[in-house]
Length: 304
Image (cartoon, rainbow, N blue to C red):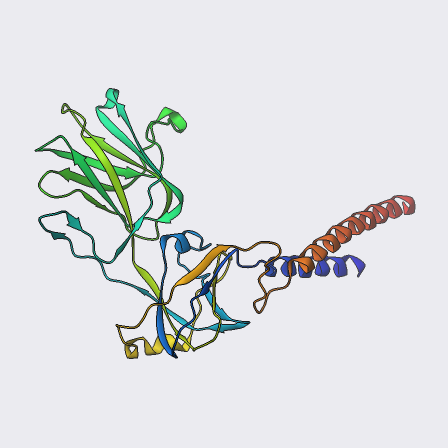
């Protein structure tokens, strides 16, 4: 009976510790001047801090009350070629930390490393080339460095997408799905032509926003960064067609990582001090269980 009791206690403690996880990132919403629906832009910074690629761990709170929202992803952009440059509509620029180029002369190709400061959602890459009037090259994108040999001495060619880079149109690379990358590799097959000169590379995230009802003079907080949360199911989802497409925007202020002094106090979660107490109790129980099992084994030996 004692053994079963301790097993159940360990299971309960393990569940309690798991449920004690809190949101790692949060920011306050700017106060609104009137009651109504507002949109909150999910910037590359906010999206990069979510724990789940489907954005299921985003929540909005007013004190400890969870506020319903709609997640809206704007439609694909239309490419407009004008006299100045290519314009991307409905996309937000993602900061590129560095772009480095290496020539793989043995395989007659150029390998471009594109590095970001965080695991950003990357939906498009725009290449700005110079020095060539006419060109047409096959190319592909990989998340792994093609120059590093993998098992069986084969080079990695884990292709995310294949493209054609051509002077006939401005090179834009589309990446599909829930893409979070901190580094990408663009491989350009040169064959016998001279390597292309890459001036710079721009990265973009498709615009995403939350639609929620906010009240005047109330303080709201957006939180994210907690694993194992499922997508919330709000009644508001049944009325998405009733909400105007043109609603005012509200800004996320002071979005930052939560510190030990600024603990999450949302419903269904406990303070970190309790979590550490539970961990200590768990260690004590494991030690006592080990002692109990050793003593039981010794008693059986003496009985025999």
